[in-house]
Amino acid sequence: MSKTIIISNRLPLQLQIDNKTIKATPSVGGLATGMKSVHRDSNGIWIGWTGLTEEEIPADLRDEVVEATIQEQCVPVSLTEEDIDGFYYGFSNRTIWPLFHYFMEYTEFEKESWQSYVTVNQKYAEVVLDNIEEGDTVWVHDYQLMLLPALIKKERPDVQIGFFLHIPFPSYEVFRTLPWREEILKGLLGSDLIGFHTYDYQRHFLSSVSRILRNEVSFNEITLKDRIVTVNSYPMGIDYNKFSEAAAKHDAAKNQSELQRRLDLHIDSTPDAKMILSIDRLDYSKGIANRIRAYEYFLEKYPEFKEKVRLVMLAVPSRSNVPQYQLLKKEVDELVGRINGKFASVSWTPIWYFYRSMPFENLIDLYTTCEVALLTPIRDGMNLVAKEYVATRTDKKGVLILSEMAGAAQEMSEALIINPNNFEEIADALKQAIEMPEAEQIKRNKFLQKRLKRYNVEKWANDFMTSLRDTAHKADIVKAI
Ligand code: ADP
Ligand code: G6P
Image 1 (spheres, rainbow, N blue to C red):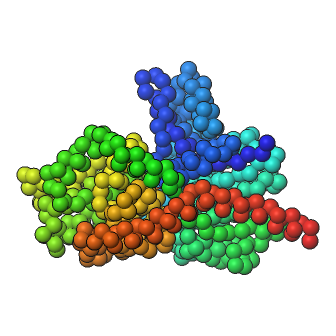
Image 2 (image 1 turned 30 degrees about the vertical axis):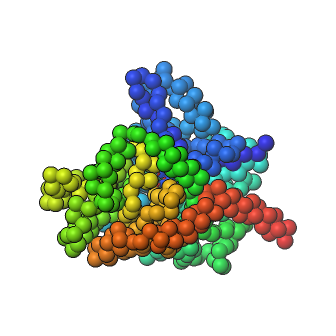
Image 3 (image 1 turned 90 degrees about the vertical axis):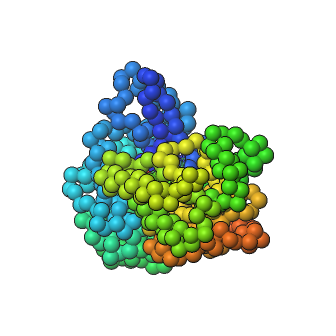
């Protein structure tokens, strides 16, 4: 039976060695959380990295690693410390990530890390080629593996290959600065279908292809010598029922986790106070430092809200070997300390800050308890947290404030949309959110929920796979002509 092979740098489970045994935890990030439900419902396999390097896995635990991954229909790609240094901390996260998020000043162009990116993409290709059987479909994900489609196509021209980019594709003027721009584009063009979250990313990609490679581009098709590559946008959805059902269960049982008890305590002591939530990986693209500064400005501009609001900020540790992430951690620690020191009273702390990963139940505690979500990325491919927040509002109350720089903003116009660099606008949006009449909250969320329910992650994956199958038919017609 033919199967779908999903490939991403990170597997949906991350392995750690704890007390000489292998422990698995779920991966954080939009790609992993979104694709997990797609994978769960398929008979395919998922190829990727376990989070442990070759050097970290003792010989006697190697079987356990394979065992842990097989259970989840996953196949591990073995990477060395050197690979992770050059490919992951290097080219992926010091070149592509900052460049594609328009952080030019953070972007490094290092030949060694580029070479490591090439080597590791080849390692992935070997594992994929070992696992492909006739009739299989391949779906490659994200910016770490942009050379993979061409590497696979070269060996298996018969196989349908889809690629989806989970981050923005930058404008041609930014992309052209990359010394390896041609190689990256040619790598991607090994695909039969290339998907982006938004039409703007698609447009930027097509313009780069036509200006750099000079391929013929018409509407959403790129003509190569022997094939046509289709490009389209597919805004990724969430597993809506998982979030809304978990929230409904949570409301019914009043799940008393320690976090929930603390949140309830806050509500009991200041019943008319509002909680403002933010959840992200600790990443400079998420605008966390700006958000804290904007919150400070809000408390200064509207002092009547002192003791009446609290910002609950969850930041998940991410890529902590990259200097910019270390600097951001320091900046956020200092900002939180400074603002709490400046405004706190005996009974009130303006910011509750958690720097850790949390289990799913705690995420639901936060989503369901906080009346406002404040998400202010400077750039974000999509931002699934915005969608998850809305999905958990079972009584349809709650207000989402969302940056216009997030891909999600294009489908969520009923949220309060702000420019993350405009503190005035953020402060006013916070006031508006806190004072918004319940009827208006319900009206806005009704539209949002309806859309999120319809365009859920399953629909997103089906749309992509249907288009990929259509490209096969198109290829047959071209051959026949
Ligand atoms: P990104 O992909 O850039 O990290 P998204 O907002 O698109 O940003 O996706 C983040 C995903 O990670 C969401 O699905 C969210 O539920 C999940 N997540 C965020 N924080 C945590 C956490 N502390 N523990 C577990 N999952 C988390
Ligand atoms: C984003 C990226 C993913 C990545 C995730 C977590 O969602 O699009 O590709 O896996 O962040 O980042 P990490 O570097 O920990 O894999």
